[in-house]
Figure 1 (cartoon, helix red, strand yellow):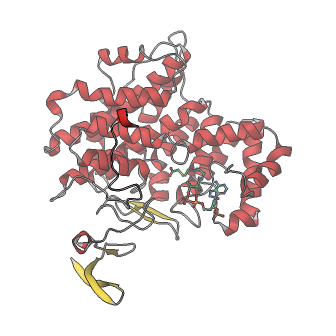
Figure 2: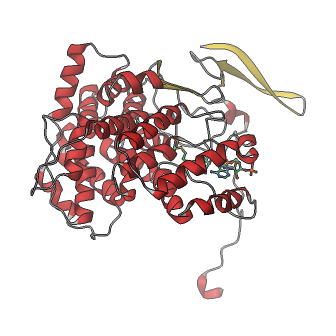
Figure 3: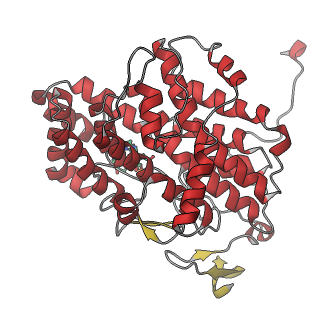
Amino acid sequence: MADSKASLSIDGNVVADLPILKGSAGNDVIDIRTLGGAGYFTYDPGFLATASCESEITFIDGDKGVLQHRGYPIDSLAKQADYLEVCYILLNGSAPTKAQYDEFTKIITNHTMVHEKLVHFFHGFLPDAHPMAMLCGVVGALSSFYHSDLDINEPDQRMRSAHRLIAKMPTIAAMAYKYSIGQPFVYPRNDLSYAENFLHMLFSVPAEEYVVSPTVARAMDRIFTLHADHEQNASTSTVRLAGSSGANPYACIAAGVASLWGPAHGGANEACLTMLEEIGSLDRVDEFVAKAKDKSDPFRLMGFGHRVYKNFDPRATVMRETCHEVLSELGIKDPLLDVAMALEKVALEDPYFIEKKLYPNVDFYSGIILKAIGIPTNMFTVIFAMSRTVGWIAHWDEMLGQPGQKIGRPRQKYTGEIDREFVPLSDR
Ligand code: CMC
């Protein structure tokens, strides 16, 4: 509903009256849908000030460091709920009753296995393939297993796809890892929690029993929770755009995985560890901080800064606590972790980072935790993708359930040649 209007005048002439729409929180939005008719497009590469959709799922106030899923603050969810409860909330809109939670957990647990034919897809990859490459391919391939359940206009079928994806992502992620290190695939165990089962599939071998550490399982569950959704980020927007054409959910999630892979997004946790390895020792921290501040050097401190959070990242606050808890409970000594802690201290006190509001982000701390619990670096982004699957699918489902949903089709400011005479190849 329009609450007020903005008038767009060009050279003193009003060319459009644009309704201003209010959400339940956050900035009002100017509805520019009729502007094309007046002969103008808006120009906003990088979507710095563009609301691409209407959503009830996640609210962020970057200046105040607020992140809420369905109205519940992220620190309450991280400390008082487990990941599957957060998945339920994201998908269904409100916290479940105990019976609803038990039923949801049972459904997810009962979908953890993958079709045995899917296993063969892995054997087509070279052993040194990046696990994200395998994840992209195999998740997309899931669409070929559920032909009869891909009607995107059927809410029940959409929800079944959501359940399958949440359940099977850890199985596929662990298979990608096992394949890359030449160990046999480990089948899921339905007597374990979501986080425990993932650790089991990742670390157990047929030759001996693997006992899951409760500290590690708790940290892993928290990493899943803190990455579960984050409003209209690059990968979620990718999933929405792919889904807007009516593409099936597995193909859309594969597109989300691809977008997340980049180092400016989900690839930052892996890039952060690679950077810590490059720094290598405490005496080189200052040198790398200077590089990050040098305008002529493209180097950035990976794991620092965020497009939306300009004071602090509320996920990073919880993740930082978990990080210190894990390091002290597991009594881990690793020179790289000392480098990370020194970098955190320098950057938090350095005027360049303070002025530009560059704080350690969630991926700085999650990278350190994952390293501390023995997860290989190339699996970091895979774990982010697993955790974010629920957010992607919740947004996809919300979009398809909205009346008047349209294919996403941005316009452009064209800067190329125009009306050129084409000369046939034989005359050039
Ligand atoms: N190290 C050094 N300088 C930086 C950094 C950094 N990590 N990030 C931004 N800056 C500087 C940048 O050079 C620019 O300086 P100036 O105004 O003098 O030109 C200023 O800060 C603003 O940077 P920007 O690129 O315009 O900011 P953005 O909002 O477009 O980018 C970002 C946000 C996250 C892509 C960026 O901060 C970055 O590349 N960080 C490192 C990668 C990273 O950790 N990404 C994970 C984000 S959290 C996980 C997720 O949600 O996906």
